[in-house]
Length: 475
Image: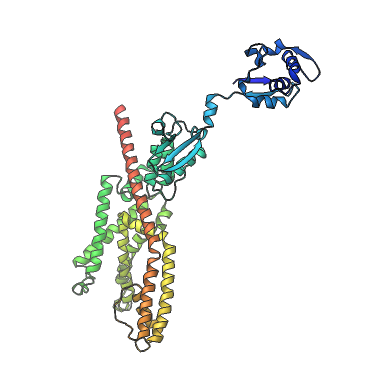
């Protein structure tokens, strides 16, 4: 980088600040230092003086007046001013770059974009085809909201934050379009979309790992898919048996050990027991497996059969007759087997995650309904005391009206009763409509997330298979 050294006296002479021409002539031949020593002009003219590059008696004025004005402030040679002549690359880094993204204008420095020279915006050659010579700007017909995060990526030296309004798939497309790099894409996938199996850590033992994959990961192999289909079939069969045995013609024979329903029920329970035990033995973390919600459902679906079998074998008829209600409750618990489908049907998992995420909104909805039921039940009781014997009796009418079911078993007949009934119906509609958008939004979020997980999991599986095939072919 070139530098020009100018003494204070020379600056005064060039700018016409000296005392006439004599001072200018004196300064062209001598330069005075702090102690009064003098040097010949030839000593200064060679390397440091502008006279060394111009004819004798003339100064190089192409440097501009700013440099000489600063030099004129210092009359002592030790206070020498140094002014770098900036190169083209330094000037380019200070240039502003105008970017038009679907009508939204952004301006940033060239030095900001050059932090990632391999990207689309950081490379002048790559972004050259998007330059509009008339408007002197780069035009991109892309997502404007997503570009805020893209530009922040350059400004923050690599911090990538996805806007909440932009879908993950759309934002991933923007990352790929602006060529931020494969490492950025992998980091985004790791942070935003986890492609790890939902079963958690895998067992270290090869045989145990294989059994765990077959029982927990239906898409891991053909055998796992067959086992999953068979498990779903057995679950549906047990639910059908649970419903059929309540028919009048089967109520007496359902406890008969020689009946077909009893045999099918025993077969289903045997399969559920084997499945639970095998999964428990193959689980890498036994305590975590036992505390899992779906595993608790599996255990609840199995235990009633063994409890009833033990009570029937060890008790007499009197004891059995006194525990009819208990047996009915145990039989009712078997209906929870339907939740076993959530292990194989992803839609039920999405529904469960949606309800869990919307728990606050559901509690808010229940609180509003409770308030409405109490208020309108009290009002209709005092307006329709002939039809409603008490406020608790009017609860049913309020619930049915607010939920827009309207059975019609209880109806107001007076004018004030109908006014209260109309207000109850309108309030119920508004109460039910308020939290619905939040619940729908949560369901859409988890559904989209599940789709992305499956897509990325399939891509990773294909990449793994191709790598294994290539390695096998090379070996």
